Amino acid sequence: MRYAILAYHADDAFETWSAEEDATLMKGLLEINDRLVAERHLGPAARLGPTKDARTLRGKNTDKADSIIVDGPFAETKEQLLGLYIVDYPSIDGAIEAARQLRRVNPTAVYEVRPIMLYVPGAELEGGGES
Image 1 (spheres, one colour):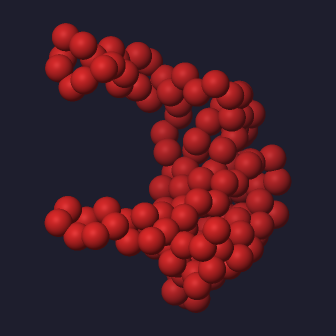
Image 2 (image 1 turned 90 degrees about the vertical axis):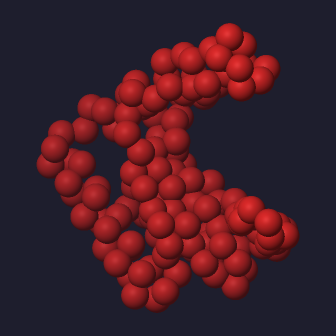
């Protein structure tokens, strides 16, 4: 089963890290990435750009006149989505352990693990995992 590990952090915290602090953090995270790749558990992963560069599209339908584009994600939280990992484990327990490993390196981040339902046009939805 595939799971998404979503990494959240407060914008004002990670934006103040020095280049050295960021490099140290990334070194630790990449060591976990390399191990998960070697174990054939890690799929695509992405570090998202700053939320100040994000845009959110809102509106009732897709017509340009009814759409509103606003700066930033404007989530009702201080924590913002920083990145995501796609992992493949037989159960959610393996995905949770991978998230624990990531959090050991980045203890101020919050990691959310969610099953993925893969959507392929013309195909049935694949189950996302166990509850």
